[in-house]
Image (cartoon, rainbow, N blue to C red; front, side, top):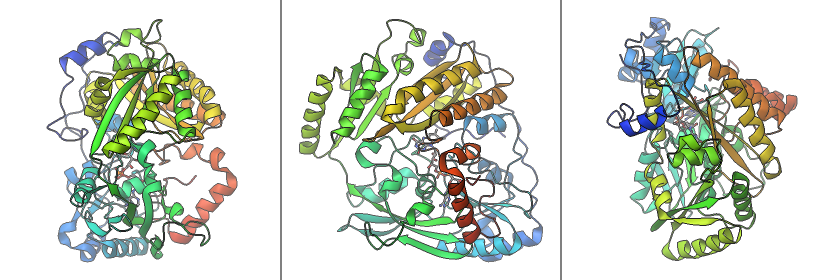
Length: 519
Ligand SMILES: Cc1cc2nc3c(=O)[nH]c(=O)nc-3n(C[C@H](O)[C@H](O)[C@H](O)COP(=O)(O)OP(=O)(O)OC[C@H]3O[C@@H](n4cnc5c(N)ncnc54)[C@H](O)[C@@H]3O)c2cc1C
């Protein structure tokens, strides 16, 4: 069986010749095919427990075949892909259970708690920090709880501009349902095509239009959650209130460790009549970042704003030979406006005046349209690059503006030192706030035999650098198992104790995503 590649098989394929030639300028390419036949370990869950689960959700919604379990093994980080390509499916769940509604989920949790079965909530399976790998020890087996049947628009309140969505709805499905009412959500992570509403909430995801529409957790007004201790309904009475701490926040970003999110009520907005994207050039990454800060602090943010550093700009301009060299093409910024014609015109005029005054050079619509056309393509390319021996992976962090330069330099040099000469380290800023911004790094290197181990070491070095620089271990990829070891310095011992106490209270048998999130 071939490994699971990203996305629609119709779009997946070998590296296009032109890209191959370009990449070949920088890296020595070597055909590195994935293992042809990847065996899935036999299910460990005792037969009587499988029968019991079938009685809970129905015979046809409990499946154990190899293909179903392989597709729900781990997530889509590059280490996940490399392990799978090497034929390692040791983290496969024993059984896939597909609940149809909140009550089904609750009944599965009750059963799993009673029989000590680990439960891994599964949305789109696009996790990149090990959030879908459960520790097995002490459990009768592992269930992948696939929420894919729970994909409807459950309620709409057009007066208040809220919609209640099933957790298994993928990004495009949710948008299509809302579009029937002239509405939209506006959450477009690069994994948009496959990631789900429940997954967005469980990981506190942030999309490419976060400057205009906010991060996903900021869109959520209410949640319904099934926990081993029963149902929790959070928010849903009001946009905001002073009824003690906001308990929605406990479940947003809880990565399935506290409960299974079964309904998400979000703020929706009218679909934009106009979408315009354009490019700007900056003399340096620092100059572009300062311009972003000025816009954010002047309440002048467009819908999309992203800035590539010099190396990423060279790649965007198809000039990898310019990386690290003199006379590179400066730094490319993409700026996007969405809304009514009047709102777009007014915002564009104000932003153009501000960016021009700050030293930016307008490049017109072409770079913006090229970015918009390819905005979801990179994950397909990653698989094709792995096929020719080039390892590509990303990591991200976030800090205050005053710490941005220090963090950028620290992570970049940690990665370059760990991976050695010939590694490309690229960076962009695509999520900005009045007080700070995220930094998103991409690395590419020729890999070699020990590429997984080399990358894991480099990632650890980058994580150490992030912590030492006083930044956050993740802006939107979440903690999972991969970042768990770096969470304590960020939230402190008291913070860890709070997480553990909540876990004990809601999930006393520890069946939900054991090993994920909580140090
Ligand atoms: C190529 C690529 C690009 C990406 N780009 C972005 C990006 O731009 N922005 C961004 O924020 N992220 C991005 N990600 C990361 C990932 O897509 C997000 O974390 C996303 O929110 C995960 O959603 P999912 O439905 O795939 O969740 P899954 O991968 O299925 O699960 C993620 C975690 O949430 C838990 N979970 C899932 N559903 C529920 C639920 N209903 N209740 C409780 N727990 C649940 C899982 O157990 C797991 O721990 C990217 C990933 C890839 C592979």
